[in-house]
Image (cartoon, rainbow, N blue to C red; front, side, top):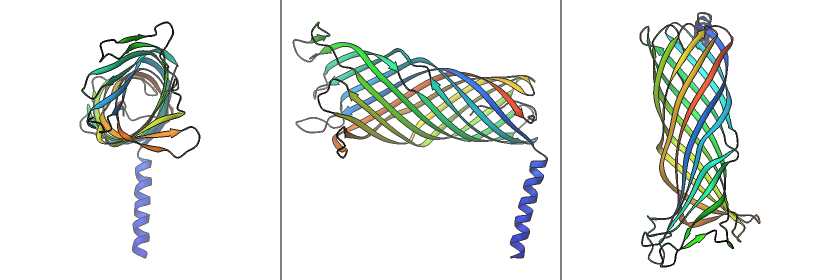
Length: 328
């Protein structure tokens, strides 16, 4: 018992000694970014009546064109001459925007495209939340290595309207809509994506005021739920696709930091996120409250985005021990 007590005292003493010799800072960073994304939502044949369940029968492709996001990051950091520990959290919210495009394609069992249509795509409710933990090691006077853990929740909500396209393309008499009497109904789409990334980045200090960083990450597990409702359908249900992806979600990021003063810096970042096409299960969610029904058809999901981000980081408390922060 006495040895355990002495061990605990030693750990506590070492911790306070470390804190006493470290710099502690708390920072805020208002951010703005332009983000473009592409989400693919696919449906496969059920394998009946001579169809191949490994082939797609339908695919919706939702394109988000450089939508403006704004947000805020908060940071807490403990740093010494050689090591730093940083915890951060933040959010990004999009301004609604309607210049994107959604395409809808269908194929028959022989692989021939039977339907193709295009819609105006409005970004309705789109936002991200993220949190991260980073350890930074100073390798040389100008080079730093930073492994980190990063969690991200992403929500996208789109509305596709004002569609036009061709039906019965696999016949001798394809038809174009709208034809004056009939119009194509719109589609509502919503997706939620949760990813857990392990990242590594390298930061190079170029001058006293400027540093450059580059890094990448992989998510061992990504969970996504995609929901859509065809507004013209007489059946009152929505479809929900559940996707579990293992080691199929990747991040790449790079940027430059400008240190205006010991208390203020300008951070610029380019980030891409790519999740490979992954199969999952589709369910029917009935509006009348009935239990969700598993579809006989598999679903598929793929995601890609690129974001150009700029932020001004202000230290509210404390002062960092030289250098700039590598982005997460």
